[in-house]
Image (tube, rainbow, N blue to C red; front, side):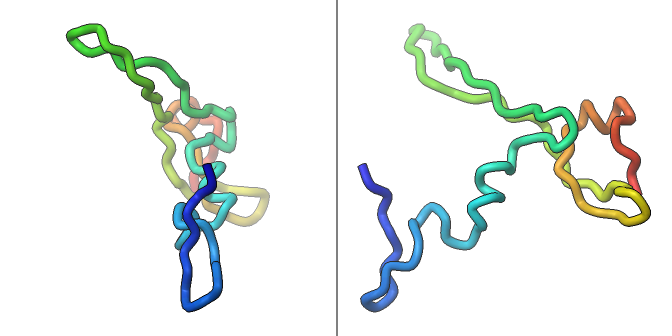
Length: 89
């Protein structure tokens, strides 16, 4: 199946799912920059034992960290923040 595209006039601009966001932010938004923790996948099991897919997202926070002599924003999981793997600015 092809993704639907947004049509403005006669020009096809971008897939609807990407409007307003950069492609890199969509692909890397749930990934810790320090440890690389990503979403894990599994099944949701209902009372009737019907199974459907679900995913567990890591607790990613955007924090200002020291990067050399500068500061920058980084997406870091809370376990890395608590373990002291990043130095907040």
